[in-house]
Image 1 (cartoon, rainbow, N blue to C red):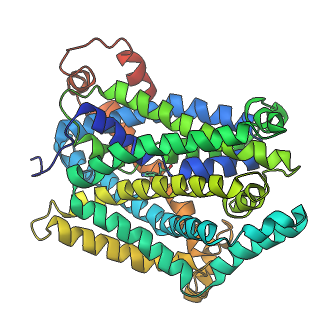
Image 2: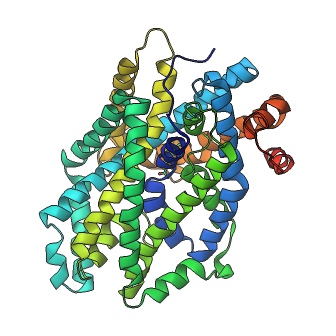
Image 3: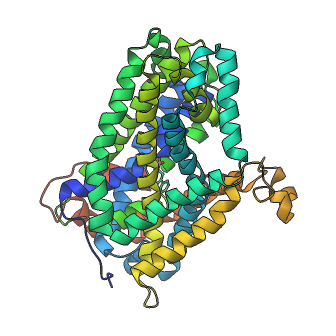
Length: 446
Ligand code: TRP
């Protein structure tokens, strides 16, 4: 019962499209922020460990299910096994929507920073002391967050971009953009990393990233590294199942997953190299959390030669990454809805992006009446989890509840319910090449 659908046209575009989903604000925002908060190298090592141990096998599994069933992420659960497993697919889709609700706010901030950099809003920082410039930079960010229309407008622009690409479709939209923008993104981020590495005092930043200090190793580091591994590789919500369902028959699934993972790690490390050396060279530390990207980056980049140009390149890369990742979060929902008779693809895109614009609006004003859970009498319920607003709510529940739950059901299904021959056939493209690690993979899944 596979859907009427478009597919990616070549093996290489299957790779670029999956990579365009994996690479996102996760690399350029979450990864440096979390590495900054959790002690650098220790966290990074831990994150590599989970990426390899869990991320890659789950990604391969999603590709297998997708390509085997050639249907959307919900029906994929039905076709291969037991209908009640469809709930796992639905949880995954809800998880992706929860992510877009807050991701679109951050994407909007990134868009607005491109504009701010070009219009020279950070120019005055270069003549100020570090302290003054820090306050001025925080002021610019605070003004954006508290403005009435600006953040919502930028968020809407980001959502509109997603809608346009999705309407163009799988081949003309997703595949074509990924094929062009992924190599461009790589070049841009390498340029930024070179700028970081040639900064005087870059060694401190590199030490922070690569010399582990196990004294700060604890369960919080492990849990957040694991959460990031799932989020980074876009696994657990059906995104990779959906993209896998567009793969060509001759795509090597384990090989593609490996390439996506390692390229994705490379982008994160390059982003780290663009940021940490510069931060350390000004005697600052990277522990401030989410504002690292929006306060510290403009602060330090305004102080280095050609900094404005590199900052522009940096935020353009972030915008490319964020937009392509958002597309991959929305596509599975669109693919699911448009498999229903009552929905054309265009109608599905309008309904879903419209809903995202409405709910996403709740998260965009950090201090507003709308973002606060107390407005809806929900604050007491979530206070014990430290959640005060919708932004935190969607972030917390997608990463800590929906993704792990959907991921778990998924792995149970794959490890125990589906028959082994299906896997072997998909993993080896019907035996056209050999795969020694099959037993290991099944072991990890189980
Ligand atoms: N991987 C993306 C990032 O790092 C985010 C993302 C896209 C995602 N699609 C996903 C996360 C599906 C979880 C599930 O920014």
